Image (cartoon, rainbow, N blue to C red; front, side, top):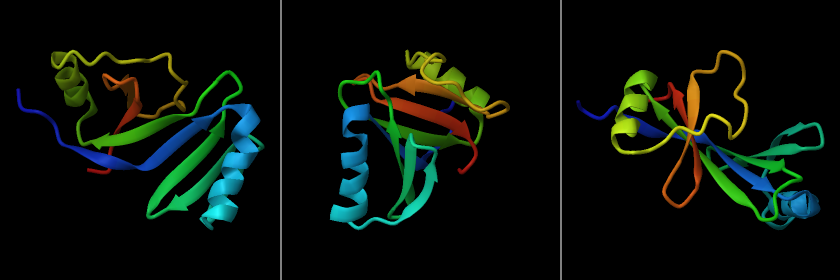
Length: 121
């Protein structure tokens, strides 16, 4: 079986503890001068990060920040099979996906979360 094509997605998510959320947002907005694309309630801010979307998400149960990445594939079923043959285990319980979204979660060996989504290739 040949490996499906993968390309970087357009989203990078930074999950941060609640006690540093506002300071982290201020760092990107004020110190670095990045443009805010969207504010979602009080828990998420999206910045323009050089053509990528940098999501800063407040996650109260975290004690340190995490980076989550998005990967696109043209064939989600093939990607799932391929990753399984590479001993990469799907992590369905990481975070609920929107209804109908064709995607799944995995982690790399270092524990970095990746959303594998169909499209964008």
